[in-house]
Image (tube, rainbow, N blue to C red; front, side, top):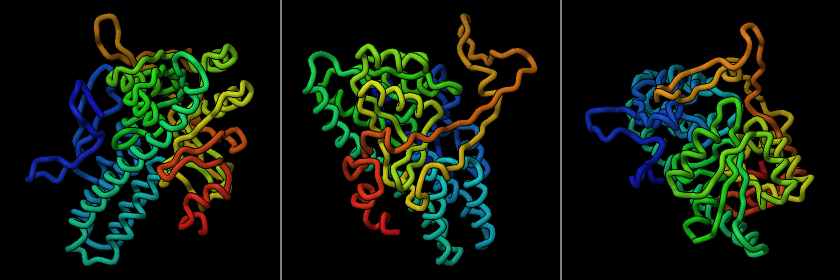
Length: 365
């Protein structure tokens, strides 16, 4: 996508021929600072995922794939390579793309002699990135058709609510939930986005709003608790969110607070769609109750980062000293609350039969 008019991706191999390095946008510095960060080792990649310099299920997967390429440069045997994979997988437990990407790279590398692994690892990581871009572009087109149909049933601006950040910053490019919005704006639809702030890390206020601003798309940042009120008053035409893992029955695990939005949408008759690229669908899990929910540092709830009146980016504490905080990072939205899943292969109902029909090579497993 564009940053100040320049096409930019979230992750890429360094152009320096003498460097075996990976460049990422450090998302912990946005929206107030745009900073690139260099990864040169396996530990760098694991740290970037763990502290959320990169985040979003597809981008985590892409970063893990490049992390395996960096690891392959030093791994002298299968044991070292497998240990590298386990180190990456352990960084964040909920998003299925992480394990998927590591296992995909390992499947390519383990049958090869050690001397051939590095080049293959870099190529496989690049292929995962290109596939992600293509999948998200296709999600955008399938979602565009939905938005055009909804817009055709009303007059005036189309109001879309989204939660967290499922834009191009969460992927390699285009995004998942925001891809249909970008496509709609490009097609000339009059769209407006309600952007949930998405406490505690404020990915909506910090990242989604920044993306929409860069794209020139009308939006308002709202408090997380405002969504239901807006739906009650007819100010939301459709909700679109992303997913970190979707179970075989259509249950969706996404950023904490998604479940409450789905409940409000259901109660008010607002369509609730989930943009779900194929790699984020876990056919090995029969339902969402078995998805591990990441519990993150309590400091993310107790503190908040922002820019002060002097223009300095600072971290301030919100809670009383000594008050404990709990920080579950995700929740599960039952399939019964999901109007449909927008995948790169089309839109389907959130149920086992529909998913298996759309992904027969995986559903049968």
